[in-house]
Length: 350
Image (cartoon, rainbow, N blue to C red; front, side):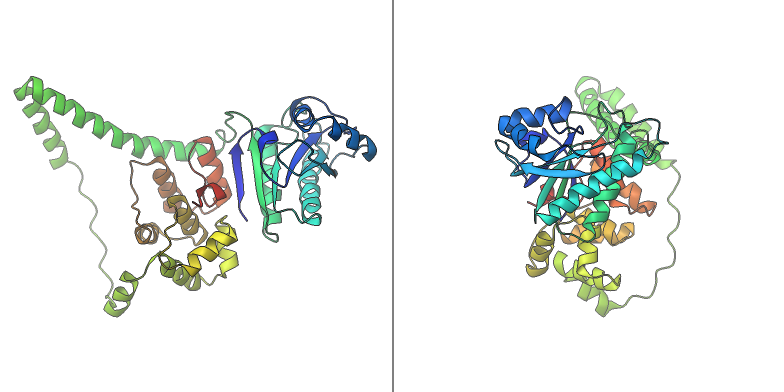
């Protein structure tokens, strides 16, 4: 099942369980803790009184009462004291304890807040790193939908080198496309006002194109296996994907887990040769299979898509694939901060 970062109010998440970043008493407090208690009603506090508190890094479970979620898993995160007092291991233990409890209760979906990243002072980017690491490790061995819920517009990853490099690549490629559109619009307006100025503008553009550096010569083409080429041309998306999985020496489970794709969606793709996935799902499989850029373009084409510089999502993925960067969770961090669709998660299934 996929891991998804979402912007939402955790008290409104329709999942089997939401996680409460509680204090050790479990008797309510501020922030997420107070919001969950208010939304659940006084019955939640009554049950919490019977639990005799909770130690830092551990978790306990109650009913959800008036919440859309059936259960609340309460965990106590560490207070940040600079990072030298075991805060990272305690925070990791919070996620592990909650997920193990969810598995014990056979829950299929869980939503986490950013534990310890509010009043407890844990740096947000480091807190997110711990969350992503522990949740992704758990999902390698379990089938569960896990959501990390961020309230409001927070930029969590903009300080990371990958984000900075991607943003620079976007500036160099995506913006150029829109500058060209602006030039086209300006030229169209000039033609209606001053024909001679428009002709001068056209001549300038043509001169730039004429004296622009030419593309490097292509390498010698390998000998073509026409039978294999015809066979691949006739393949649909499903057949192409399954062939690539075999060629990469992966199992189906290894592929869809690495792609952060729901098992049920993968079964649908496997069983229906005519199924057309969303573009982010195609990209997710390209990343999981560590495809080259030409291979990615071919896989997109099989699903009816093309790679274009008029889409920020496409530009980001082009950057990552060109540089052979295939960590889907880190890519999703960048996409999240850019308000772009995430790869492989359940919101892209339809």
